Image 1 (tube, rainbow over the protein chains, first blue to last red):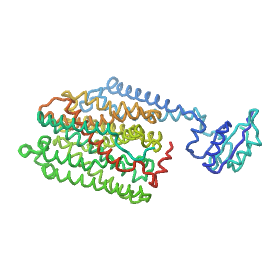
Image 2 (cartoon, rainbow over the protein chains, first blue to last red; image 1 turned 120 degrees about the horizontal axis):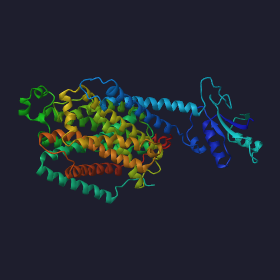
Image 3 (cartoon, helix red, strand yellow; image 1 turned 90 degrees about the horizontal axis):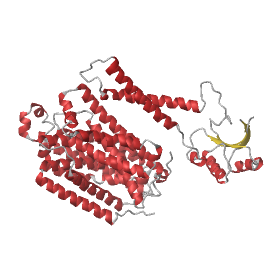
Image 4 (cartoon, rainbow over the protein chains, first blue to last red; image 1 turned 135 degrees about the vertical axis):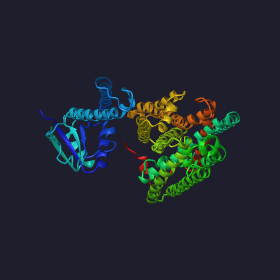
Length: 172
Length: 390
């Protein structure tokens, strides 16, 4: 079943941040906020947890490092040793640039892959937007219409007072 | 919140004690092993000149970008610049009295026997060396005065950012050229047969890391004394931490670039530099240098939380400041010690001399800070600098 949401549409980021502060201090639960660009301070107000993606990046980087060093050692010292410039077959300095590049490559690609996976993004995915202009010039503050205390009339009025240019109801 | 900085008496006494102790140990060292004393003078002269110059470079870099987030603590790079005249005096002492103890090319009879050095005499001769040194310091001191003038004009609420952009752009070019030649002159010419075209950027990367480390550490110390607490928040520390993280890696990158090209091409007149440092008891210091200047800071500063944590940040800053002293020690000492038959060592002379210089530097910096308002609240960019977000 689709859930019912109340949307406060704001024209200005300052008003949005102010409204968010008010709602948070009034202990009204905010479902989510959609903005066309990052707005400073919202993450802290909404108490959003830090992304876990950096952990993936770190692990991917370590895997890339191990794989690249292993592969270079295997090719240049065991599988097909070729004497280059009289250097030892197993020469760490020669492996460093490639290991660095592969570490970065693994880190970057696997991070992007996990990001797509976690946020369920794939080519030709149809975007589910609350409001058609949330990626354009409007700031959307969404409240979930649930719970006994949820008073649509009163909250709609409150959002308007806080500066929302329109208040909509949407289903998702 | 306190506005006017005053050096706490116990810290001031500590600085003076360090200077006196350093001077005594250095004087004893002149008496017992003159060359080692001059080596230490050169190492610390260069190290603290780079810190002072780092203040100038920081002002120019942030000036050309019209940065506002450094305005709350812009007094610190300004204070670092105020060491430049002192550095000129210290360097002049070395150039006039110590040059023959350190630089092989300053001995006319050695140069005459050496065909390579004879060819280099047009550049490497005592008079031109001193002339260049005075010229470089002249440029730096004049530029630092101009920056101070503009900065103090900003303090009275005048927007000088356009002029600052212009003078910063010129400064960056002049700094790049003059510092390159200064590091060739003072450090690379210790081994006049050896050359490395990347050497200047290598010393520069050390300069930038130690500058950021010093600025960060000074802010943390000032905050623990009760200053700047409302001016600098954890977002500022996060940015400084990112710079530390990034530039200690940049240092490692340049270190490796220099090492790998020399290692690969394997030309004797180039490899002598690393052959000397990887053997003869220098090896553990050589690898330790990489450990404390890159590996430990890299992992310590990797996470967001540690960049915003003053405890971790201050420890890493101390580590990097010590590390870059060691780095310069490793650039200077091995060859001089080899020529004069000294053993590889970091002994009491090195430690006390460095402490003495550190005391002097801190005293000069603290003295400047106590003469000016620690917060530049009237600066047109101050408010914007306070509201720094991530």
